[in-house]
Image 1 (cartoon, one colour):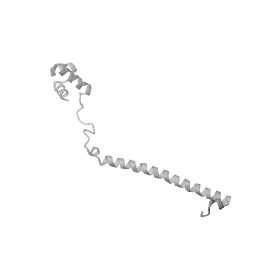
Image 2: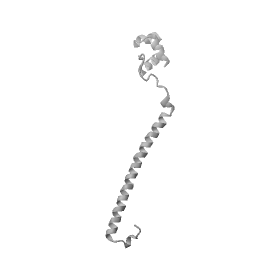
Image 3: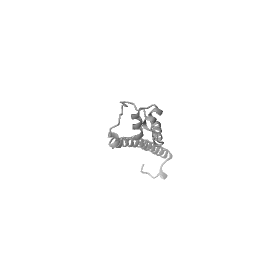
Length: 110
């Protein structure tokens, strides 16, 4: 309305107040929708940046977990290295850990 509020009648003021409250709610809802859309856009941007990065396109080593499984886990490799530092031969370590000499040699190089 173009009239100053001081010159308006009570009924007109109530109607104007309801109109302004309605407009406020519309703007508030639109703001919430824009926030939700912004989050979606940010998620899409992050996904896009990941897909254009080198990490996404880098071939994954043995992603199907195919092939022969290794007998040497991290603790076994550590044990092999400790035995080698203490002066045991590959054959002695192999006998101690129930592994082949080749597996012990491979473990000592890891």
